[in-house]
Amino acid sequence: MAGLRQRQALERDAHILWAAQALFARKKGYRGTSMQEIANRAQLAVGTLYNYYPSKSKILLAIVARDTDEGLRAGETLLKRLPRNPARAVESLIEQAVAPYAKHDRGLWRELVAAAMTDPAFARVLFGSDLRQIALLATLLRALDARGDLRPGVDPGQAAIVLYSAFFTWFFAYLTDDGVELADVREPLRQSVQLVLRVLLAPDLTKHRGESS
Image (cartoon, rainbow, N blue to C red; front, side, top):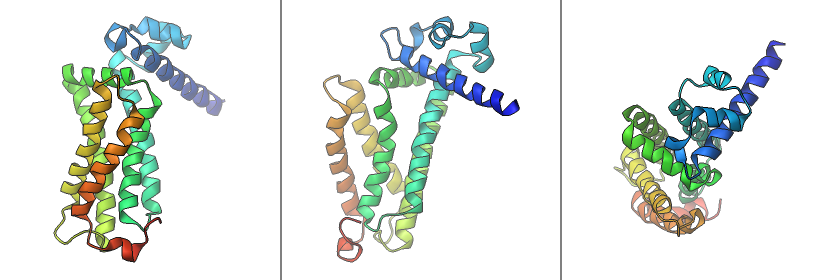
């Protein structure tokens, strides 16, 4: 019975987040959506909703945490089977960072950024998610450095910040322009990453590591 209750609680929690993100992405947005509307969409009594989440901001933070965790798990799996081609390894990890953003309407991400601009506590959590992505990139770069793939003197931590900045720039291009689709920024993002990698990687690596693996 305890296992059944736990499973039901997890399913209800997932349904709450689905209902909330659908409402946040609409015209009324995060600020215009009430807890009562989220409860209605999730087909719950509002009191039950408050048992799971004491505030609307906690729901939004849960959405961020869930998507960040999914992306990081995918990245950690990549690190366990590191591609022989160092450029492909970095590009694959950047692709994993992009993947969660394809799951939701851009309206939701706009609401996330807007909430961070007005709520310092929320901003800290959102920035914490960015730092976790940067840390994963730094771990990858340290692994590449250990096998001699980086130029001497490259700081993996600083290099990770530069690479993540390229991702962040193109994400905001998508976020701020309705005429730009996520698919439209993938190629310029790839080119930006390739440019940074020309500086980071040791010369003639593909000759030794293989182009496609």
